[in-house]
Image 1 (cartoon, rainbow, N blue to C red):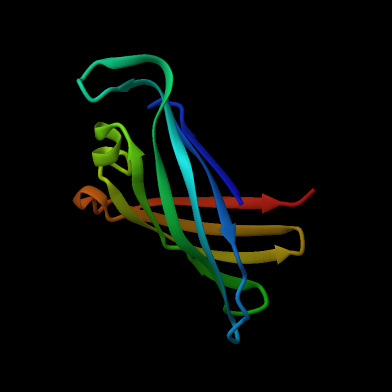
Image 2: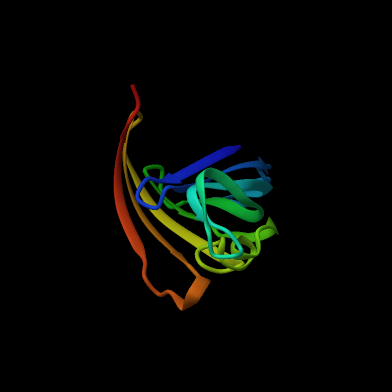
Amino acid sequence: MLDAAYDFNQEFGSLSYNIVQATPAFGPVQLYPLIGGGAAFGNNVPSDNGDVVSGYSMPGIFGVVGMYSRIEITDRIWANYNPMWKSTLSGSEVYKENGIAGDSSALFHEVAVSYQFTPRFNLRYFANWHSAGGSSSTDHRVEFNYQL
Protein backbone atom coordinates (compact mmCIF):
# COMPACT_ATOMS: atom_id res chain seq x y z
CA MET A 1 0.00 0.00 0.00
CA LEU A 2 1.30 3.43 -0.90
CA ASP A 3 0.11 6.28 1.32
CA ALA A 4 0.66 9.96 0.53
CA ALA A 5 -0.47 12.99 2.52
CA TYR A 6 0.22 16.71 2.07
CA ASP A 7 -0.98 19.70 4.12
CA PHE A 8 -1.13 22.67 1.73
CA ASN A 9 -1.43 25.17 4.61
CA GLN A 10 1.67 23.88 6.44
CA GLU A 11 3.45 22.85 3.21
CA PHE A 12 4.44 19.55 4.81
CA GLY A 13 3.71 15.98 3.83
CA SER A 14 4.71 12.34 3.92
CA LEU A 15 4.99 9.37 1.61
CA SER A 16 5.05 5.81 2.94
CA TYR A 17 4.99 2.23 1.75
CA ASN A 18 3.23 -0.37 3.88
CA ILE A 19 2.82 -4.13 3.62
CA VAL A 20 -0.76 -5.18 4.45
CA GLN A 21 -1.92 -8.76 5.00
CA ALA A 22 -5.52 -9.91 5.46
CA THR A 23 -6.14 -12.44 8.23
CA PRO A 24 -8.87 -15.07 8.21
CA ALA A 25 -12.26 -13.63 9.17
CA PHE A 26 -13.57 -14.25 12.70
CA GLY A 27 -17.30 -14.27 11.99
CA PRO A 28 -18.18 -10.63 11.19
CA VAL A 29 -14.65 -9.31 11.97
CA GLN A 30 -11.87 -9.00 9.37
CA LEU A 31 -8.40 -7.70 10.33
CA TYR A 32 -5.67 -6.29 8.07
CA PRO A 33 -2.39 -5.75 10.01
CA LEU A 34 0.31 -3.61 8.39
CA ILE A 35 3.90 -2.51 8.81
CA GLY A 36 5.83 0.04 6.82
CA GLY A 37 7.97 3.12 6.65
CA GLY A 38 8.12 6.44 4.95
CA ALA A 39 9.71 9.83 4.55
CA ALA A 40 8.55 13.29 5.57
CA PHE A 41 9.07 16.27 3.28
CA GLY A 42 8.28 19.93 3.49
CA ASN A 43 8.89 23.43 2.18
CA ASN A 44 10.94 25.83 4.33
CA VAL A 45 11.48 23.28 7.12
CA PRO A 46 13.31 24.43 10.30
CA SER A 47 16.78 22.90 10.77
CA ASP A 48 18.39 21.83 14.05
CA ASN A 49 20.09 25.22 14.49
CA GLY A 50 16.80 27.11 14.02
CA ASP A 51 17.46 28.27 10.48
CA VAL A 52 14.84 27.57 7.85
CA VAL A 53 15.99 25.36 4.98
CA SER A 54 14.77 27.20 1.88
CA GLY A 55 12.85 25.09 -0.62
CA TYR A 56 11.75 21.49 -0.24
CA SER A 57 13.71 19.11 1.96
CA MET A 58 13.32 15.72 3.65
CA PRO A 59 13.82 16.18 7.41
CA GLY A 60 13.50 12.49 8.32
CA ILE A 61 11.99 9.03 8.03
CA PHE A 62 9.41 7.22 10.13
CA GLY A 63 8.01 3.75 10.78
CA VAL A 64 4.39 2.71 11.11
CA VAL A 65 2.70 -0.36 12.61
CA GLY A 66 -1.06 -0.64 12.57
CA MET A 67 -4.19 -2.37 11.50
CA TYR A 68 -7.31 -1.82 9.47
CA SER A 69 -10.39 -3.67 10.62
CA ARG A 70 -13.89 -4.22 9.32
CA ILE A 71 -16.79 -5.31 11.51
CA GLU A 72 -19.89 -6.27 9.54
CA ILE A 73 -23.00 -5.33 11.52
CA THR A 74 -25.56 -6.11 8.78
CA ASP A 75 -25.24 -6.64 5.04
CA ARG A 76 -25.55 -2.83 4.60
CA ILE A 77 -23.88 -1.47 7.76
CA TRP A 78 -20.27 -1.94 8.82
CA ALA A 79 -17.80 -0.30 11.17
CA ASN A 80 -14.03 0.13 11.05
CA TYR A 81 -11.46 0.71 13.78
CA ASN A 82 -8.00 1.54 12.42
CA PRO A 83 -5.23 2.20 14.98
CA MET A 84 -1.79 3.24 13.64
CA TRP A 85 1.36 3.83 15.68
CA LYS A 86 3.94 6.06 13.98
CA SER A 87 7.43 6.85 15.23
CA THR A 88 10.33 8.88 13.88
CA LEU A 89 13.35 6.71 13.03
CA SER A 90 16.04 9.13 11.88
CA GLY A 91 16.60 12.60 10.54
CA SER A 92 17.18 16.01 12.01
CA GLU A 93 16.87 16.41 15.78
CA VAL A 94 13.88 18.74 15.28
CA TYR A 95 12.14 16.05 13.21
CA LYS A 96 13.05 13.16 15.55
CA GLU A 97 11.61 15.05 18.54
CA ASN A 98 8.57 16.71 16.87
CA GLY A 99 7.94 15.04 13.50
CA ILE A 100 4.89 12.93 14.39
CA ALA A 101 2.04 15.29 15.35
CA GLY A 102 4.46 17.44 17.39
CA ASP A 103 6.07 14.47 19.17
CA SER A 104 8.56 11.66 18.43
CA SER A 105 5.75 9.09 18.13
CA ALA A 106 1.98 8.89 18.40
CA LEU A 107 -0.89 6.44 18.32
CA PHE A 108 -3.49 7.49 15.74
CA HIS A 109 -7.09 6.25 15.85
CA GLU A 110 -9.77 6.19 13.17
CA VAL A 111 -13.34 4.97 13.65
CA ALA A 112 -15.76 4.79 10.74
CA VAL A 113 -19.37 3.73 10.38
CA SER A 114 -20.70 3.07 6.88
CA TYR A 115 -24.06 2.47 5.23
CA GLN A 116 -24.41 0.92 1.76
CA PHE A 117 -27.42 2.44 -0.07
CA THR A 118 -26.82 0.59 -3.36
CA PRO A 119 -23.94 -1.58 -4.62
CA ARG A 120 -22.38 1.62 -6.06
CA PHE A 121 -23.28 4.26 -3.41
CA ASN A 122 -22.41 4.49 0.30
CA LEU A 123 -22.28 7.02 3.14
CA ARG A 124 -19.42 6.98 5.68
CA TYR A 125 -18.88 8.84 8.97
CA PHE A 126 -15.29 9.12 10.29
CA ALA A 127 -13.77 10.21 13.62
CA ASN A 128 -9.97 10.63 13.96
CA TRP A 129 -7.79 11.46 16.97
CA HIS A 130 -4.25 10.83 18.26
CA SER A 131 -2.27 10.54 21.50
CA ALA A 132 0.46 13.13 20.80
CA GLY A 133 0.89 16.29 22.82
CA GLY A 134 -2.02 15.63 25.19
CA SER A 135 -4.44 16.61 22.42
CA SER A 136 -8.04 15.63 23.03
CA SER A 137 -9.59 17.06 19.87
CA THR A 138 -11.32 14.75 17.41
CA ASP A 139 -11.77 15.44 13.71
CA HIS A 140 -15.07 14.38 12.16
CA ARG A 141 -16.01 14.03 8.51
CA VAL A 142 -18.74 12.54 6.34
CA GLU A 143 -18.10 11.03 2.92
CA PHE A 144 -20.51 10.19 0.15
CA ASN A 145 -18.97 7.64 -2.25
CA TYR A 146 -20.37 6.79 -5.65
CA GLN A 147 -18.61 4.28 -7.89
CA LEU A 148 -18.65 5.16 -11.59
